[in-house]
Image 1 (cartoon, helix red, strand yellow):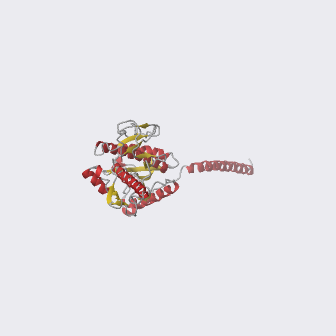
Image 2: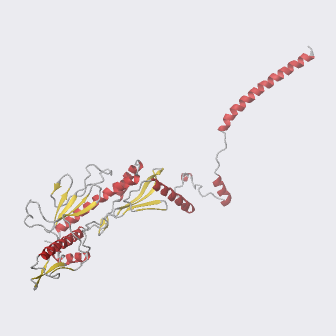
Length: 394
């Protein structure tokens, strides 16, 4: 009942109440700190707000609920900087990738890489295969292999299937451009051999009938055929590249046929040209013997122009080179005969240079037998009468 004791009891009660409040406040602050992590302010679209403030409109605002979503097309003023940035990324990717030495041209324009192999193919590439911006994506494939009528055209569905298969293989390869080159190069080589075999069959059924013969040649066997076999198919029915049993046959073309063996099974000793794909998958044209080019007097180069394949031109060139080489041999033998060659003018090889296009026209007009009369040996026998020696293609 003493007022002082009552006052002390009130102070003790007040202090106890303050202690409880401080404890509750500390606990509340701790839990509120955790809750503030989830109560942050959202990231506001400042660029859109600035556009609305300055222009009074919003260009990406959908006109209806159905149009809500991402815009797939850039606006005109956004394309140039975007393509510039994409070109930089494509160039950087090319610097990190091993480029095969066979690729003659690699250029970047507007975010698109142009990869080309002369006479074979041209491919347009960019980045962004199936949403992965670090992987290559094929935009277009164009074959440059062809004939006088133009390059070979791939069907739209076949080109799409081929491009999809190459993209998938490039995505998992360490050297994607090497995979690209290998697949398309093998495809082009098979088309080249198919064209060579087909053109040879046409020549044998036309004006070169019985003047030449052809024979398919492969690594495993030599089948005497008159052509007609197509090159191995590269695309299966499901569109996948079929590499099982992949073997490109070569072709052996004989000319100046030996009439004694023309109807027999004996080996023919007539000269021939062999067109085949070597181990490095490069087309090689080889003559059965060493021949000289009449225009340069060097070893003849019987190479195919893959962008304009012409088997008849190769045969005509081989005939001209072989004729020139044999006439040189005859001239050398005649000069050794002192009874015939007594002065430098007694045995002379006269040459009238004729371009291959002119030879082609001669063949078209008068037949193949008159296309090789532009080079003869003039021999003055015993210093009196002249004898002209020539070699025909038969």
